[in-house]
Amino acid sequence: MASHSDSAEDRRNDVMERHREAADAVVPERTSLYIGGEFTEPAGGETFATIDPTTTQELASVARGREADVNRAVEAAWEAFETEWSEHSPGDRQRILTEIADVIEANADELARLETLDNGKPITEARIDVDSAAEQFRYFAGIVRENGGETMTEGSRYGQVISEPYGVVAQVIPWNFPLLMASWKLAPALAAGNCTVLKPAEQTPLSALRLAGLLDEVVPDGVVNVVTGFGEEAGDPLTRHPDVRKVAFTGSTAVGKQVMTNAAENVTDVTLELGGKSPVVVFSDVDVPKAVQLITAAIFYNTGECCEAGSRLFVHEDVADDVLDGLVNAIDEMEIGDPLREATDLGPKVSTEQVDRTLEYLEAAQDAGGRFLAGGDRPDDEVLSEGCYVEPTLIEGLEHDHAAVQEEIFGPVLEVFRWTDYETMMELANDVDYGLAGGVITDDVTQANRAARDIEAGYIWINSYHDLAPGLPFGGYKQSGIGRELSADTLDHYRQTKTINLSLG
Image 1 (tube, rainbow, N blue to C red):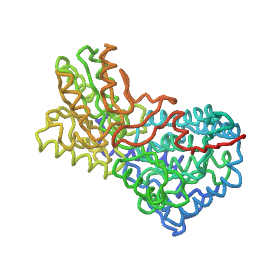
Image 2: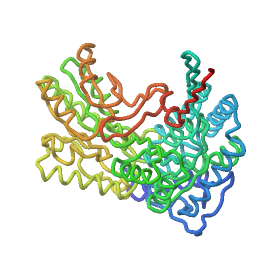
Image 3: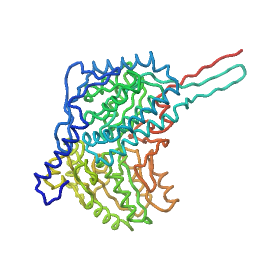
Image 4: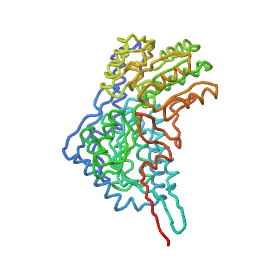
């Protein structure tokens, strides 16, 4: 953003012009559904607008898919599976997955700018997402030949256990990491031999549609289908469709429960990667500057719009003052602004609805006596106040049973709790309905191992955060979901087991 000595109007115009130029370069004026290997209009001819959260201006007119379009997509997916895709060998799929990674990398700059415009994440983080998306396809290309299965013999009996694809799977992804979540879903589904119908979030549909266009020359027609639209109009018909054999969903726990209910109508298998309210536990032996850096990344990366965000801080009393002072200073030094600028650390939230939701939690926290050590409102900058921005916020003094502590805010908000007794602290750390992730910061290996084992969550970082390596299963305990992403385990979620029992007698 320009110098603060410039007028607000000049700075606003600078942001608007930068976003117009970027949109002209990468955003289509109108988008269509991608079904059966071609872009096609929705049956009802309706559209909706996707909004740039930095400027709150319309980016593009997007096809509004409904049940009829979902039905077309599922039919196209089954046709592709039965006529071609099921005949592809693991080696064929390995080659195609590798080509997908290549095409993502070849278009990385375009995809990153598109993601920043549609979602609001800083361009530096969007580039990381694009690289990670390509890495997903390379990882699953590398393990695609691991078909699983086993054999056994007992007397005259010969048994064989094999894994087969479901056929057609439904995949519903969220708005916080649109391209990356598409890769988390598509890569293992294709590797396992399935065809898919993908529904991106209505807030951020553009990168999934662009990916579909890039795949057009790589993947056979109908193997990947993308239906854009709203949850009740497209997501519900997709997740309860009788011809869908598997549903994979990433998003909030509340919506995940509805997806599970929908799938239950046809006893459809599900995997769910849901919300989190993850604890970060800081021991007294930490290097304070390093701890501050890790805590800042844990909560403020992607503007706090991460399911695994470290949103509850449990800091030992002996270092609490120093750590909190360091966090306040780190927040003061954060560059909040236009996410297309390289220097920006914190961009806007995805929508005005998400801003309002976050501010409601902050107001409730203030009413309950929470002490705001930093942030707590919209930025007072005249330019930023027109976008979907919320200040990075640090709150102390809340009771642990307060809604702002117990519920997923999904924003740049960190609640702080001091501790001296380990058992009491760990009881609070686990006193939420979620169990997606957690962090431990200490130089003591024994303490680190004890805390990592005691935290009731599916993924624990020690002296790092948000470092998700392909091959290490990611997923949650309790109401944070069912199943695992990112690993060989994920292939099993996209395959069904067949047992062949042959009597040789």
